[in-house]
Image (tube, rainbow over all chains, first blue to last red; front, side, top):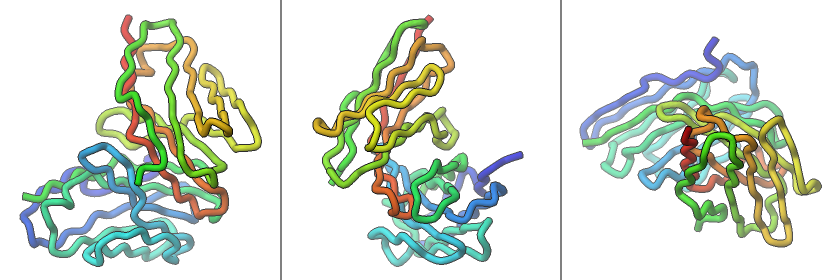
Length: 114
Length: 113
């Protein structure tokens, strides 16, 4: 039944480690996103993929690398984790490409870097 | 540079009364606006949207008003219910921008009995 799912829900790791967050949507949408919600609670878009192609790439460090193996999945790999990467990461999906449509969000992954 | 601002971090309202949430934006290119609701430990869920060609959109208890000249929009919830207690995010975008939404910081609404 879950529309947009993310794993893991919580991730605690040491500085310098590499970690991945997985996202899957079963809505048949063609566009997927990664957002970061920082300590000030702002939700900021990081990446967007449409039909497995990178469409939006905000000013995000190269240590962040999204990968979309198919339209239903968008994973986020983070290399050399830093303290400032601690945040909640949300995956979202929508249908419609360039046209703005409702985005469906996953439950979030709380990443804590120690 | 925060282009969408929600200047009230919190709002307390009695059950049955009206909740009014405000949002201001600075980018005159924005032409599509959305409101999302978020419960703790969950992702945001879509509430209602409005295109810049309209000044009002209603959906049940929720109404969004857009004042383009003032670059201001508001969300009215009437009547407020305890289940409405959540964080509400305003978001803005330019159509045909591949879903690039700019979010405000959110307003925490608490509906008291």
